[in-house]
Image 1 (cartoon, rainbow, N blue to C red):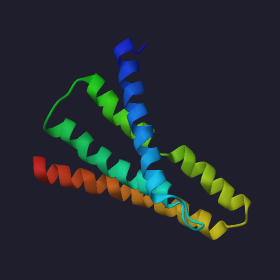
Image 2: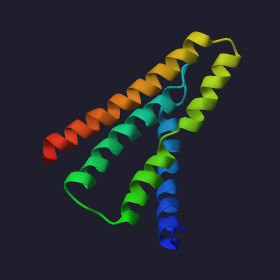
Image 3: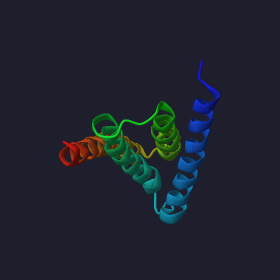
Length: 127
């Protein structure tokens, strides 16, 4: 059973991440048919999670609550795979199969690449 402090850490981080995600979405606002704000936060969030997660693993051990705050809360609230899934379904339902497929490919491979680049950058700096 999670401790109260663990729950508070995740909740506080989630509020920060969700607020940052809203800000990015408002700044980029979906122009045209492709959901650029969602793709952007997924790639940015995955890159930063790769850097910070690697930093914690290799260089600066931090408490479980700090990891929960940042990795689970902030990045969980910031990245938006639920929004991605809903947007993809809506694109497919409206017959825009090509854009829906492009959205899946860019989010999946862009996010995986971003985590790898963040991991590689952090390992290069820290090791």
